[in-house]
Image (cartoon, rainbow, N blue to C red; front, side, top):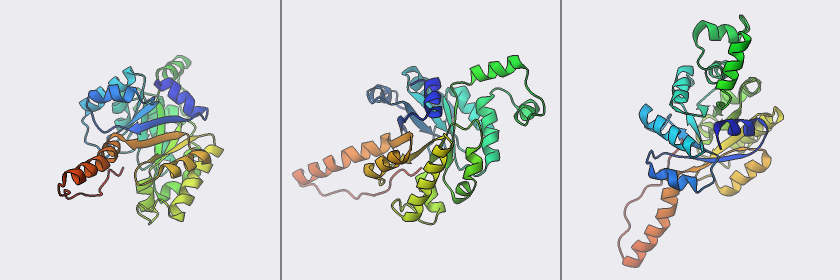
Length: 273
């Protein structure tokens, strides 16, 4: 799915499905192409990817018609435009907690390459853009999606104002950070967490804003499907790293048992983003 098609799907309430890709290996492309992904989620907030690696990944996935969505390290408009320059088709913004942050990011994502005073005046109606420039920017940025992470109690409190920003395409729940902010760390079946997720999904759909959650182990597939039934349409399932561990762990345990080899010390640590 190209960026423009993804953006249209988000805006019209159609479901889109992707996964987090951690590895910058070129061999991952052939495997990803077999999965029917609409997009890949590339994270630069928690994953150590340099600008060159990020641009390579974005260009490569875009070339196989899998839209690259990049989470930038902070709610910074300049970081957003850097990722777009590298080939991102959508920007995911972490830890957004008020509508003003969303408006600033919308300026970067939807009116690139405008910056500075001209952009500020256009955003707040002080100096409307010439028609030719306005049309040019709309066409240039039509494939760019703006998605913000809702992952804290303050974001919940400001949810109505965040959802009211006209150029917001979707919100993505960050379950790990949200559970911590609610005081129930990694308790993904806790009523406080489930109530918050239901509130975010319900509020977003009521405003016709796409909404999703990144579901990873230990969040069960059953729980993920329940959120889809509630209205989640931006589906981010697992990651390449979690799939690697999930597939190899039971097989290696069976091999060790069959060979009589002593089990190696292991950790239950997982990628939490």
